[in-house]
Image: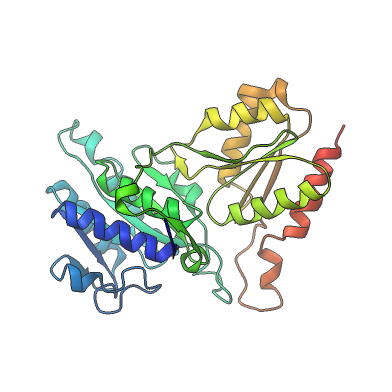
Length: 327
């Protein structure tokens, strides 16, 4: 394997799928001319000049056009610029993209991927820093993924593009520049949507996360190890569907659960995980479930206030120690 960035890994995934299937194309703002706002489409237009399309600044058109193309037999990949802008095209996502196959009695496929950069950026303020994955896990008919590293970034995107189902692909903006080992095409092992990975085995507490939350999960696991505790760390990767059995197995082993994500705690996806564990493995728990997320407020632009809405590794470790010491 080579070491490349998350953004480069997604670029490889695009090239792989576009080479193997002429029905795959990309559309979005500034992706042909500029290579994407985060460089995740850099030089792709040179390889596929007729299949990397710059669009007007209209999310309704961008998603609606992608939905129409998918219904007509293409495999569009639609770049949303920022995940925050998905709200502009909510009818196209909620009522069209997710529902078309059911409304047409299964006669139509919907092979479309929406790429949605999400998460905190320094001084990104309230309209360019949101993590909204929980909205879309409530919509039947969609699939939702949120990888945490370059390897999964490539494999989940390849799988999403090959899928006949509509997939929302959340890619954390901070992670896009981070590096990791990624296989060559010859070494490719396709990812199965809905499967989590037990990244670390442990016995004392289960930490469940995804996307950039996994960085905090790893840091917390290292801090606990220095204090004599063994944390099992699970990367969900896929949120819809999500791997209930992997989480339940782990909780039945460790008897304690922490769920953390960068998105707002209230109404966040952690609540779904916690409710499932209470319903199906309540007797295994030896302590209340710990949920960690951002406070219920918009992200401030102010450099002095912004850190207050970010996850704190020190606080996460303190809260985990309280959970481990609970009797």
